[in-house]
Image 1 (tube, rainbow, N blue to C red):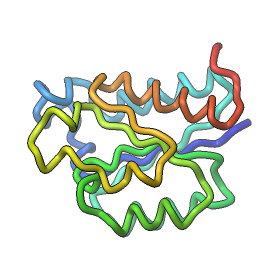
Image 2 (image 1 turned 120 degrees about the horizontal axis):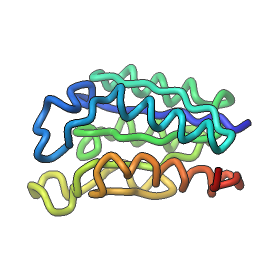
Image 3 (image 1 turned 180 degrees about the horizontal axis):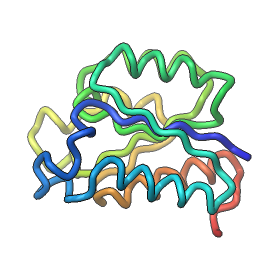
Length: 149
């Protein structure tokens, strides 16, 4: 069974409350529960982690080495300026798919650039929380796994 780590960055613990017109009304717990079941139906173990702290996210990436087959990550605001998270991803052999609920390329100009994207296998943006499923499927495909139930 493949093991994938879902990492959510700052403020995503506020899903369902924070700017629902942008991020929707589902909570992070809702998203994690649905995605965990979605993964299980594809013979994938999914573990979920969220932090508002850059160092904790870096530690999770480092600790994924040898423990997980892949990472699906919504780095949130860290996307645009965290060279430390970018370097953590570049420094491990675990592949990463970047995901964003909103389309960062159509929002404020400072959100248009991801310093994370160049060290990931792909980026999914702008399709709401459904993007988490797409990111998980992309990772499963990358790992040579079965996509259907």
